[in-house]
Amino acid sequence: MKNLHLTALILLLPLLGYNQEASKSRWTLGVETGFNFVTDCLVCSANQHHNNTLPYAIRAEHRIFRWLSLQFSLGYFNTTHDRLTSTEFGLSLAEHASADLSFRLPTATATIGPRLQIRIGQGDLGLEYRSGLLTQTLQVQAAEFNGRSYAFQHGWTAARAQAWRLSYTYWATKQLAISINGETLSAWNLGYPELKGDLSSLLPESPYLHRLFSDPDRYMGLVDYFWISMITIGVHYRI
Image (cartoon, rainbow, N blue to C red):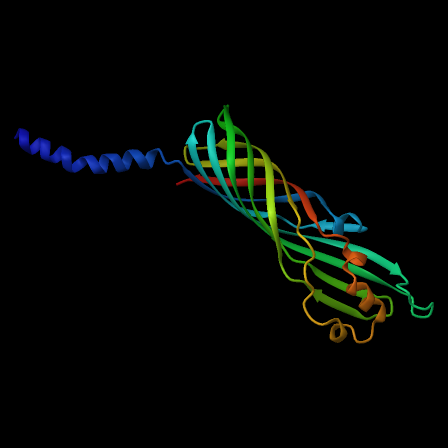
């Protein structure tokens, strides 16, 4: 009988270990959305109006200690900006023209980094830093006052990104939490996105826009950095 009990205990040990590990899972998955309230880049700051669309993110957390965790984030957002341009570009007075430009900047990010956290009430106050990759393209809609309009698509550029975040995560249950987050994300050395297509075929009847888009400095400046701040709300589940 003693041997039977010992055999049964040995067979149950893996199951006991599995159950214990499952109840102490260190992994959390979540989704977030919110709004962008500050955007700054050389394309953006020179424009008259801008509109930020909702940011989205998928997040994962691996808790190393009670006070330290590793954060993973995949994010997407885009911003739109409008600007009125008017310049001669060496054209004659009769050729002088103006155009209303609308910029759209779809942006995707992948970042990872540590978070320090302290327990406050039934939640965690956290400060985190992440770094990784930001990739971005540029879409431009140009409308001249003579009624003609054109659309331009640029290629994707990529650069190193970094993010700082202050958050509070409230654990409603042992497995489900809601977070409120404030984050600033920036990227440098993005460079010029390359215009797709040949200008001669894209702009057969617009010498003004042809000169404008031939010189990227004229219509988007040195696209060397991107900086955005956002507030998001997230739902997280401990798996």
